[in-house]
Length: 121
Image 1 (cartoon, rainbow, N blue to C red):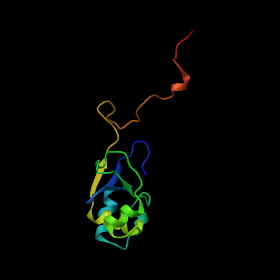
Image 2: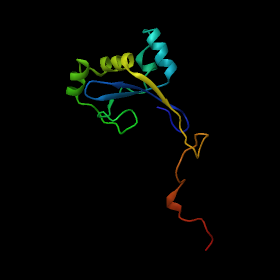
Image 3: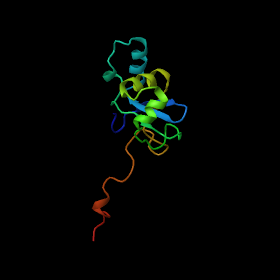
Image 4: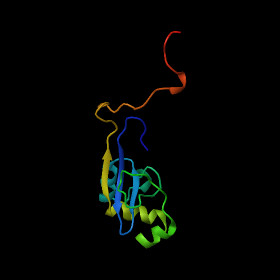
């Protein structure tokens, strides 16, 4: 998974009952995998972990799906097969780190709150 200023790429799959998300290394690696299935999944996904959003879209909090949820949506609870189906039928999304205050993608928030105010006494 990217850290710091790197963009975060994911695949969002809108299912019949729930939405599913998997994190991927980058969009190009997913497109290369779709063209050439001999590329190992380990070179495409950032971790073999499937997330469920409970129909709240790709930007909400993520939970782990139960085996029953995977079984009812994909016909199997084997996570590798579910990841392949999500990659095939999902939409690619890439989010840039940053906002209107930090256009360069700098990390946000205070540096160290435990140090207190920096004033001479």
